[in-house]
Structures are given as C-alpha cells and as structure tokens.
View 1 (spheres, one colour):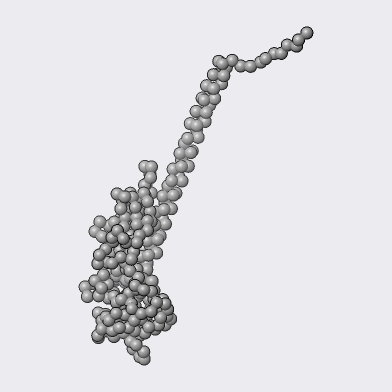
View 2 (view 1 turned 45 degrees about the vertical axis):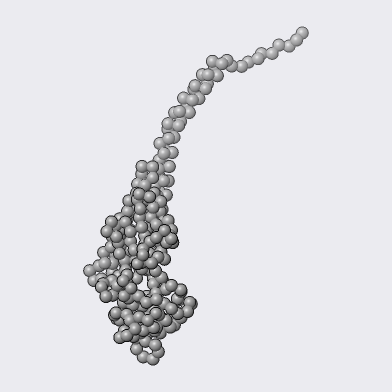
Length: 258
C-alpha cells in the first residue's frame, strides 16, 4: 500500500492578492517616510551650502584684515573686492646711528628697528600709504621694490625711491602683491586671484583658487570710515541649489592706520 501525501500550496490568484497587498502597504510606508527623508536631504543640503559660504567669507575676512592700509577697493557693481596684501612689517630707522630712511631724496635702503623681517623675492615696501593722490600705493607712489637678500634681514635694500611722506610712527609694511575676490553669479563661482600686475589686472595666466560654487548672488561694499583709521568691508553671499538659497552676511574691520 503506497502512502499518500497532502501537497499543500497556493494558487496564482492568492499570489497576486499577496503581491497587491504588499504593494499597497509599501506605498503607504513610502508615503509616510517621504516627508522625513525629504526634510533630512533638504536640511543636509542647506547645511552644506551654509558651510561652504561661511568658509569662503571667513577666508576673505582673514585676507582683508591683512590688507595694506587704505588699499581696499570695490568695483562699482559690488561683485569684486581688491586690495594689496601684506605679510609683515616693522619700523624703519629715522634718526640716530645707522642707515636711516631719507625722505628728502631718493634712498636705496634703511635699517630695521627691532627684530629681523622675513623678506622674499618680489616683495615691495610700503611707507605711509594714504590712498590719495600723491600717496597712493595703487599708483606706485608709496611702494618701492625690495632688491635685497631673501631671508630674515635687519637692513631693507630697495630700488632707489623717494617716498612722498614719512610715517608718524616710522612704520613700513611688506607687500606681497594684489589680491582680488571676484564673484561671478552667471558661472556660479567665487574666485580668489593673486600675484598679478595691478597695472594689467587679472589675466588667463593669473594664479587663482575657487572658493565657492553654486553662487547665485553676491554684494561687497567698503566704507573707509569717518576718521580714515578704520574701514569696514561688508560681504553678502548667496548660494543656491535645488531651488533653495542660503544667504550669509559678514563684515570685516580694516585697519587704515598706515
């Protein structure tokens, strides 16, 4: 006698019903999860945009605080800020023994009062830049090329130059060249340029670094200050992505005491 087996199973209709029920339950779960997931993605996107904008504005602020006094300028459109960057400075010898800086005739160097100054090839020396006609670094009137040795020096050798005005505090600054921050909303970029000839301006060969992408708008303003001893640069930067925009505003104090 052969044993019999009960082959239990399910029909095609039952399988279709299970699939339909599973799809309905999955759709309901996805509907409930979509809003939290979209909110998380949007929050993460806003955080990334805000972090990128904040990093760019902080970098600009650090650079602007090192600008040569009275050298900051903003283009009429408010989309670019330019200044002469400085690395260091010190005090020149104005009297007593040693090599003094002569303001009555062209001079070729002077002694440094205090510690040695780190000098590099291509540096320029600025003395009492006021940013006005006759004492404007952009016109080269308060700048002299450094022609001495590279390294820490206590004597600053310069190309023959008669500076127009003496500094009341006997100060000089070491200028390492112009710096520009240019915002281009059409390309969605904020770019830093440096190491170019200010009489020529930025060219295709100018060194550059991209600070921010997805820039939708920007505005830079500069107020030199009533006393001309402290200026203020205001910076507004908008970054947009997927229909959302993050707008950050920052200000940077500028020391205009030459």
